[in-house]
Image (tube, rainbow, N blue to C red; front, side, top):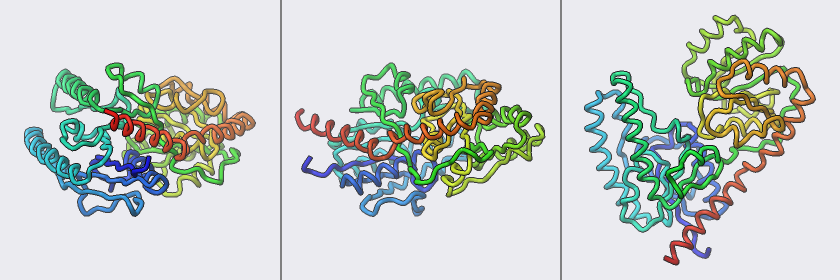
Length: 388
């Protein structure tokens, strides 16, 4: 295409170090630097706060200063009232911003803007991308309300979401497993998340260390991993499990202490040099109850570390070829998880072969081929739109 593509992304903020912000920054930087795209990122929160992940110099951010963060801590009634007034303000400011930018494509990351982005009167093509799986998206939990009301709210939210997503030109999900769940839609495309790195160094799979990485929250299932490790520890007391993350540390440490495995199961803090930690390990474990994709799996595999993962929704089954570049375990089967970890501990040859295969197979997740898929999608949609 002769004209440089102009893309606008809508995301709440960029100052917090979570997966969605990280992936968006990685893609936006590549599109700007290597494809010459004009990238604009529209924010609602975090005024005055620097992006956690560094943006390429040509990328423009637009702060609408809606400040949804101030809703947290308010009573339910106050929160609802303030929310709707903020939504009205957001819609007005977003429309003004898009008319000023005049993007070819506007991409919703399916946060609060999805409720009205299809009503924007600018001429941009509207796309959506989701960083969660359908089953666990738009969860609603409020212990002050009966469970049947919570279920009803979630059902209504999902109905509302599908009504909006159906109107998008394309809707991008992170796995074929998740794509199969969106049976109500005919505009779904699968594009995987890209690897944030592909290091020169890799593990030789000899250290007697297993690694897990993620926030200390129930979703990540570290309580399940710790239970499995108590079984592994009885057979292989000379091996160590290190879990890198932050959050609900006390509950996990109490469980470790109760199982009397504190010498071999260690809770580590998050670290900026996670590549080194992968390369110091011989096995990676994902024990999550659910995922949007499972970035940590591809990170470990890029470092030559074979993964053992529950078949949680969604991501692991798209990434891991069972018995070839890693091992899959029925979701929630703690004894099965322990068994597969022990299998890799006890066979160094298999461990090394799987690690080498993992590193080769994971090249399909490098930023270059993933960006090419996005480029093809963007440019084909723009060309089709011109012919209308």
